[in-house]
Image 1: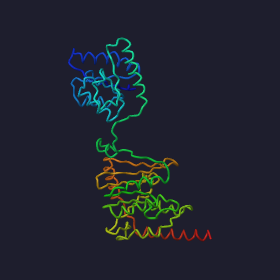
Image 2: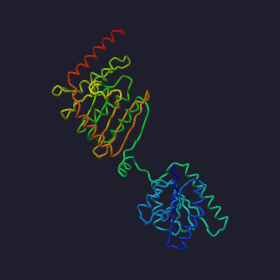
Image 3: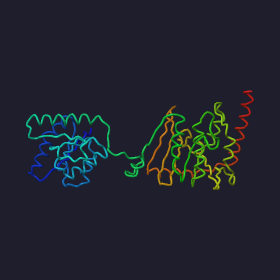
Image 4: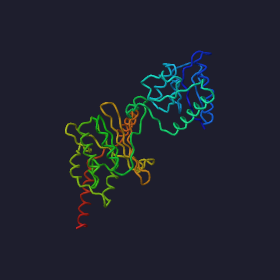
Amino acid sequence: MCKKNIAFICPLGDEGSETRKRADLIYNHVIVPIAEELEYECTRADKRFESNLMSDIVKMVVDADIVIADLSDRNPNVYYEFGIRNALKGKCIPIINKMSDIPFDIKYFRAYEYDLNAGVEGYRKFSVFIKNSIKRLEKNPWNPCISLTPEEISDIYNVTLLSKSVKGTKDHYGLAESMFSKKCKQLFLMQRSSSIVLGAEKGWGEEKTFLDAITKVAEECDYFYHIVTLDGIEAHFHRKDSVFPDFCEYRKRLKNMGGNAAIKTSHKKGFYLKKLPRDSENGDFKLDRQARVLTAEFYDGTVETVIVQNLGKEQLCFLLKGSGLITYLNDCIRYYDALEYVKWKDIERLYQKYERLSEENNKHEN
């Protein structure tokens, strides 16, 4: 197992100088013995690198579990490294041999003033401070000085982040709705039992709010790619507790475009519905494995995705943000393009069947 690491940043000076002697005394007689006792490896730039490359030193400072920084002599390189560490991660122990040397801007870090001329007792107090500081910091979370948004972190590191996750059968609607605070350029939605076709289910106010939001987005965005499952929609008809009071209204939001079903908008021709293949059409494809996916690209160039997945009886919902999601969106669009259109006659058949079943249920209830 890889040991944890302590990095020591300090003024080094020339070989044989007073600065180098001081750095060696602290490293060899204080930090290294404590690091070994606490099962840490210890690193100092001149001990690790053949050349004093700044990129290597910065990597050492960033990668370390804990950094000890000697701020003596106001060395600009040490202050630069100290600033990087505190900005990104924290967990830094500042020390100094003369407190009057510390600049005003970093006084709040409360550096420990050591005295190498204080004899055995001075070394003992110094060592106790370093040891206790390491043990305290190793239990703490990272505490960077700066606070970056998920979007900023994504841009800097070119990564995709899990921005938020929730558990529950309704919470994903709130996550999805939160995406629409920015103007949407294009949208992909794969939803087995399409809310856009049926409308919101009775008792699911969160779904109604989401539908109102996505209907507005459909009016404003350039492209809307929606994949549904006809079998999934029909399966809802046979559930006694599933009622869709606004389905007639949502029926009006679809249109017949050359025999194919599309989402109607006021200023565009409409966005075609595509359908997932049946289980029998592809032996490796199982509808019950399909997560619900909502991915949006915004006009500011960012992309966000909500993925809903069942884990047994528990529903997990993830809101992802990051530049890498544009690749995922493009994959979703290619998948959409490869699927068959939903025929208008299939939509008509679904509505007629729902009306018939609703009438039969009403007769039984009366």
